Amino acid sequence: MAAWDYVQNFDGLSTVILGGQDSWDGTDVNLTVQTGVVLQGTKSVKVLDAITTSVRTVSFDSGIWYFMRQCDSAPGGGDQAISFRTATNYMTVVKFTGSAPLKLQYYSSGAYSDLVGSASTSTLYWVGIDYDGAGSQFKIRVGTSGGWSGDWSAYVPTGTASTTSFDSIRIGQDAGTSYLDNFTTTDPFAAAGPANLKSLDTNLKANIKSYNTNLIANVKSINTNV
Image (cartoon, rainbow, N blue to C red; front, side):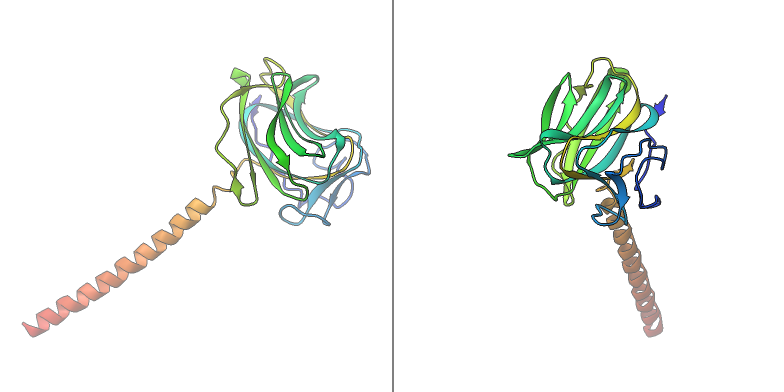
């Protein structure tokens, strides 16, 4: 087993069904890589109506990862789900469910809790998961395109008790239209910090250089006058 290291933004895949690409199984024509609605980059995965669950085999027992979800048409009484599991043992599930209101939920201790109690359609949501398999627990957080809505949650138990690892990512949907994009290990909102620091460092170096130039000029002027 290993820490999560699956990174996929789907931009490099062909605009056909997802199954058969990047080790995803299935042949469902309602699960496609497309360019019509894009959450980030040039392509996203579209999930239309009810689909046969698509599975990608993995092998993880820890790690931090992030991914993007969007619901354009609510599932009503069904779900639009991404699950992380081994057979019937769930690390967790993240799903859109309902319609009035639409909710974004996660699975812990055999029950669902709200990440977003009243979610909006056609709105990008980032989800972050911090998984501690040894402790059978995880933290979770949610944000939109503007940033995280809050800090990480406290640790909560895995969906099924004592789930110390999982071997698959599964996409399942009962109804509606949703989108999936950008599995990554990089915090999507952490990049602003280093960029700002780089700009600050550049400006500081420029100011020091200007100060030194002026200081040397003043010293030369003093020496000349003396």
